[in-house]
Length: 183
Ligand SMILES: [Fe+2]
Ligand SMILES: [Fe+2]
Image (cartoon, rainbow, N blue to C red; front, side, top):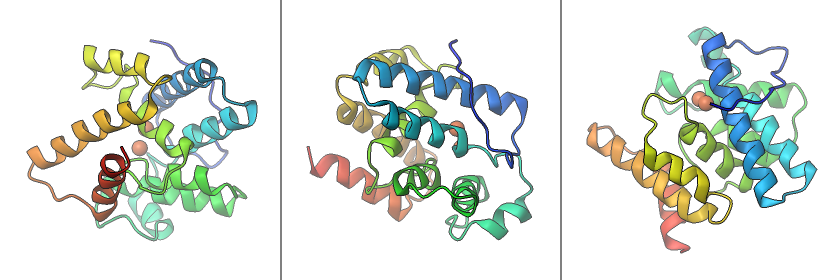
């Protein structure tokens, strides 16, 4: 499995295992950036979001709760909003990067390309326990059709949530609707 170097923030609290995941996410984002011919500046935005998104994955819950203004009442979702808040405090001003990090576990209708790419790479990186051959095909399709792959991935994730009998958060519904209503 490919991995790429990641410039984790100095305040990161993340296990070595999770660092491996983030490096594989970085490898995918780097590969897609090259295939899609995006500017160096855009690629750097993607990689900043990648480095930040799970940076507080191993932080204590009380620390995450103090940082996250909204985690939908679900502890597992605290680390995204908390990392976005911390990154903003540390000087990150790019709204697209911050929203990518904040909503990476959920989905967000207002995302620009950086949020979309992080959502895809986070889910599709080959080290995931749920990785399948279908996901390998999706990885290959991303550079030519981000929006179609996004719909496929969101469909799988939303269906999974429904299959588990869990509620759909308003942001998830808004994200899904934005994907199907604009196509
Ligand atoms: Fe995460
Ligand atoms: Fe992640």
